[in-house]
Image (cartoon, rainbow, N blue to C red):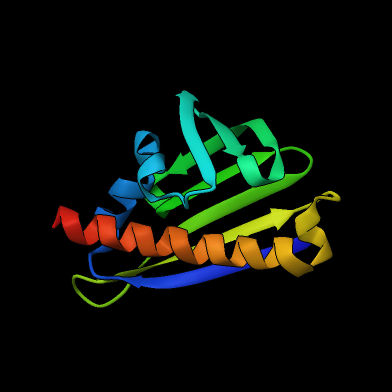
Length: 134
């Protein structure tokens, strides 16, 4: 098992940021380049990670009252994203991934380093999207 987490301050209030991350049709706008995630229906997504040969369906739960999005593909993978209130007009986002099987990411090295970079890239893209929306 391997756990990954990244956090980034956002230059917008929590509701604005959550509006972007909870719109599953906007996932391709802020996911890192090697990760293609698209909504396929109510509460479902298709994830394609070409460098890993991953092509899977997953479930997504959006909780507006908690400003939280959770997703997973049982029994090997789960994740969540939490938007948190900060100073007026500001917020932060924490994204967490859990690899529960024997994927390359669980063995450290290059695959784990790539996941950390992808998390940072996703949060940077999300920040740019939020700034452009203001």
